[in-house]
Length: 275
Image (cartoon, rainbow, N blue to C red; front, side):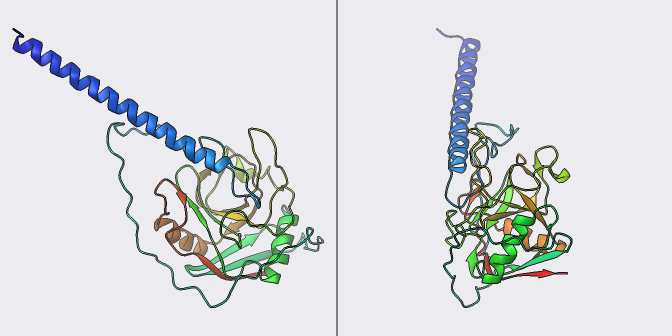
């Protein structure tokens, strides 16, 4: 006959083994989830959706009990208003526009969105090709009525815009050179909150895809761990950051840290002015 003490030890061991199995299963699920996210983000698409390095969305070694079920994020209501009337103008250009930007002047871009105005100070001195391109595209109405199609959260916290297709595949028909990758703000592998940078098709593992910026760009609403591979060309205003944080607070569609914003972010009108 099994004594009470032996029975207690047996039950304790069975409980321990169940906990171990749950932890291992949770770890497998987490590794698979991160691999799927990283693999999807590493896919090179035309027009250059941001290709994050594998592990960029890793949870960084969470201290939560691995056996605990993951919480399902709530989906806040859309905080943005209805888009202004108008349609996207399909445009494609054979080559980068002639470099006419004044490197000694100050330029500012304003994105009048359904969620509020986002002001951006552009750095023509350090990223002349990029600023020149946006000056050209905005003047043509390229960004008007386009949707900011991607929101990420975790180690990388950005809102991605600039794709008329809204799929991550749109581009203006030409590519831009990488610029300003040694900007002192990018020290430590971090793009600080308030940075505006270009998306591109660079694959760090293969070291292929340099100079592939197009029209897609991302706005950093919280410090983000990214290697210095994406041209930083602007800084978001304080009021613009408030709008960006409101968009981020509404979350994204997947609940996994990378999806379509729950907020309907449409650029009703974009303008660039020189001062």
